[in-house]
Image 1 (tube, rainbow, N blue to C red):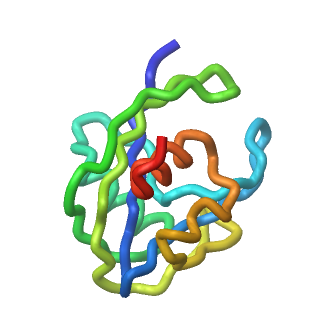
Image 2 (image 1 turned 60 degrees about the vertical axis):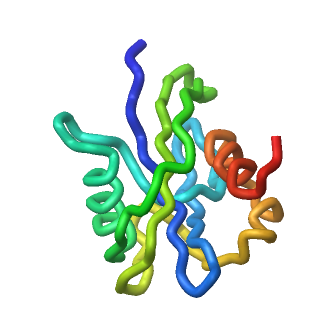
Length: 130
């Protein structure tokens, strides 16, 4: 099975981080995640993140730095390589197309949300937990 490259943005605005709850899908229940998406051929992770955040949330962002890059095997058997980046919010108000809810939350409150397992690793990186 091939690996899919995926990016996620830890987007910060006024000290809070944007998280979003995906719509339930065939094999995936509705859980929280950092917004982002699949990379297209020839696209850099940074370009992908800017495009995906504009398409999914209608937000303008600036990609700052890489947080982590890990491979994960999903319950479906699909393998992803998740690249997580810090990003700065520039403009816009979150519009929901692939998500049922979006929230700006304090970093210390992230563990109060039920994240997809790959995104939970990002939360632990942010909080300095193993």
